Amino acid sequence: MNNDEQQTARQGILFAIAGYTMWGIAPIYFKAIQQVSAPEILCHRVIWSFLILVFLVHFSRKWHSVKNVLTSKKLVYIVATSILLGCNWLIFIWAVNSDHMLDASLGYYINPLLNVLLGMIFLGERLRKLQWLAVILATVGVLIQIIAFGRVPIVAISLAATFGLYALLRKKVSLEAQTGLFLEMLILLPLAMIYMFGFAHSATSDMLDNTTHLNVLLVSAGIVTTLPFLSFNAAATRLKLSTLGFFQYIGPSLMFLLAVLLYGETVTLAKAVTFVFIWAALVIFSFDGVRFSKKKKALVRS
Image (cartoon, rainbow, N blue to C red; front, top):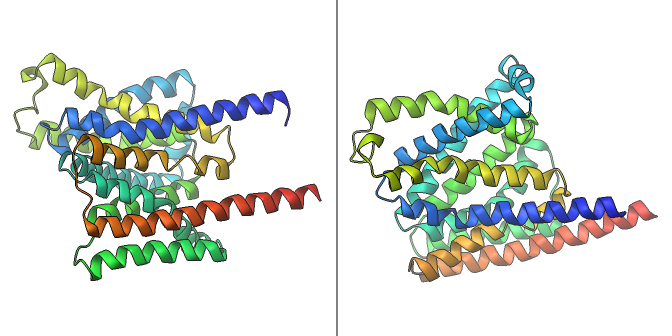
């Protein structure tokens, strides 16, 4: 690896750490506006993200890419990813502000394992033996919580499923992150506007009645949303997918720590058992990824 490649890789690592860290500490932001309902916060995320992305798309001269998608079959996929992303965000916001942050953390721990399974089912990808073991361990962890403790981790499963399907469809549509996110916000924008001006009648729904501090926080939803996505995109263009994968546990790990240490959520026996199985699955999954990557490099050299 020459100096330019090393510098690019270092930049990619920094962007990856920044992106996943921002996702991991995002609950602090949502807790700061928990007096606002989850649907309203979601609408603010969509509206202010859209406005930021209009500038980004304009200055990066990507209107041609936007037009191509709007007049192609890819639009069907983008409509589906928009709905999945909106559902994922709504569940996440509700989970954070309803003291279910541990469930949210669990969902994003499960997500990479679910991605492997979805790749096998829908993309014809073959699972290696250790990947099968990791998926089985994660499944056992969830089943123990359901059978032994009588509790279905609905929030965790919903977050993992919506984001897993979102990632699957985005992979199939193969669209650059900034353009894709702009189109998703464009599709969600009318729904957000209709809800805010037609159905939202809470104490915080009219920004003219809010304090300046609250309005600044609500407008900041656009930054909180787009900045991690842009950091992730910058990392993805500079790092191998296998390398990028090792940083994805930063987000749920920070959520877990925030839930327990800062917001006082209790790790019940049911949650503890499931987390132990998921963490064991992720250790095996990561070990398999390292081993497979080394084998590929060895084959290339030979």
